[in-house]
Length: 502
Ligand code: AHR
Image 1 (tube, rainbow, N blue to C red):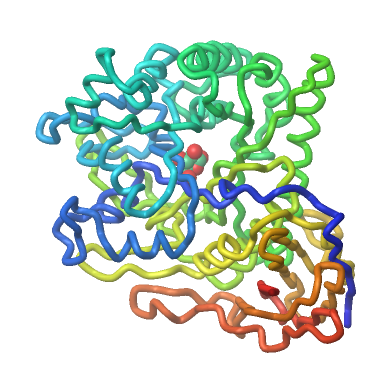
Image 2 (tube, helix red, strand yellow):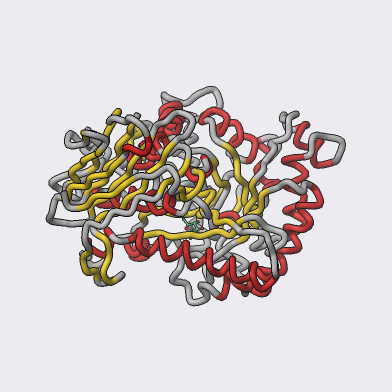
């Protein structure tokens, strides 16, 4: 054994909220059109949605889905997307230099969410628009009837309100690429005004204010402090966004991405708590990690950007990253980071879902398949129930270029007090050594291994593609067993393991 640890039901991190397993759907590339919506596809249902995609999204186990952007939302006029389809305008989407046909809008997306069994989380446009339009969308979506916009919704075929609880106050407003990018001061003011007004409609809304687009933005930290100084009393969450990729063949640093995510979360918590302390406030701001994933942004930057006054394609192929085993291992460790901060990260959204940096890929007229990242998400979402428990595993460290000395093994655990079930999630970051971990589980009761899953491959860069869509899946981790109340599990190099105990 290279490391041993103990699980204690009293060493609780916090309850694991279902919203931790949220997703994100943006009008971007082939996400909506030729992704979830393809009326001419043989698998299309009566509304034009692909049944095969719906089945995969259900299997993935996504709780809440953030919509409709992303950078897209900062130029979006929600009114364009409702009412008779034939009257909906085609618009320029400045964020992705595309044409938005508005064939799928609020109503259709909400219908699709009912089919996949997920909750709607909406972002309002604080880029080209402001408080008034946010209020109008809220009225349209959530007021039962008797006002102009509520009646318009009913006229458009939806009697019951959409009942959207969670709202993002804009998107990445700290980013110079954002249409309507603002300073922290300016954004803090408009976010506070908008939040106050929205709460005058419904005091129970859950509001997310924009934090930084990444922990590596020049304004990181100061942005959070300033924005929260303006909005502390009016919002519930501040957002975090993070994307990771392997750069320059440095697999060791890439595998340690969750170390960066851990520090990011802890810095934002510290900053939020500082603002609370200065204000003498009892209130606590939580984190909505509403964009996270592996994303090869450097490759994206090298792609010829769509440009030209006469060139605004519909649903171009954009951000269609194809994920490897190593990507899925890192992805699994990012989920471990979320679980280990379940006390403060109470909502998160995998960015994104289909075709666009997605765990699910589709081919127009052709199949839909699971990327490598599909597996750690679906398995973690299904097994991580109840409360997150501390699981310190000291299996040694290794040096990395980007993050210094980091732990070889990353681990998280959950325990469901109601069912008595537990789950353990482990990542081995070593590129050469197998490591064995032993966890004393006696304090959780008489448990044995009910299921185990291993993501590992001789070829760390194996991928699922249209030609070979099932090249990578998880298999059982045959080594996992409980003997005398001790779980022992062997972790191959560059691997992710989940063990369900019952
Ligand atoms: O998820 C892709 C893009 O990444 C989103 O539109 C934006 O919010 C972020 O920069």
